[in-house]
Amino acid sequence: MLESEAQEQERWDRPYSPAIPGLPIEVTTAADLRRRAGDDLLQRPGRVPFHVVLICTAGDGHHEVDFTPVSLHPLRVVHIRPGQVHRWCSPGSYQATLVIFLDTAADLPAAGWPVGPRWFDITDTEWNHVRTTIQLIRRELTVDRGHERRKRALSGALEVLIVGLGLDLESEPSAGSLPQPYIDLMNQIATDPGWSRSVENRARQLGYSQRTLTRGCLTATGRSAKQVIDDRVLLEAQRLLAVPEHTITDVANALEFTEPGNFSKFFKRTAGESPAEWRHQTLR
Image (cartoon, rainbow, N blue to C red):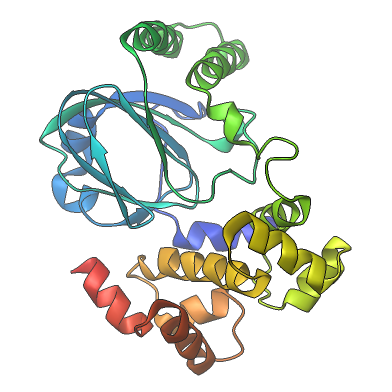
């Protein structure tokens, strides 16, 4: 990512400072996070610049990722990725262990398959292994090995956690499971969005004809290439609209619409309501 693109993303993300400066990994609990941040902040949608692995250990509740509710119960795992918007809907009704880390701490694909929320359940045996790894990360956070040695040790332990939970498997679909033109399109949007909504431009950049790209999207999703691109732009628009400090004009500019009116027309056509109406319903 270019420095200018990174700076632009920071404008939209909720600020984050690791618990230990310079170490891009943190282990905490939902209860500790509530004490540090407060329920008022947690229950507002927030776009995050880091990964959150939430493992519910007791109780029941709900979490929201990219405006999709996720039910929580013991041994439910939720993976929230950088750029996604999430909200703590019932932070006091359950207990959870949280592993928070920046992209720089782990070798996870930038594309982040799937695009939307991801959650799954683990067994008691899997949890025992995962808990042991988390305890190792906690211990490494407190051991004075020198900064660089501690970072290497933490990265190794985090890699074990990622593999143990299968988070590395969401890099992209296996060969043959989805049409390659569709995979290439989604990877292109994720790694170098540009927010162009032109099928012609996207197809040319990828080296496909418009027909081939559309056929791949129809096979994978039942939707045309134009609809797939619009769906992804709409999701990003919703993520940005969830940041109340920025105006609708700011969102339109970030998504490279020529003027706010064109953005409002696009949003109403794809979402069924205006950006202002959607924001009011989501943030109330």
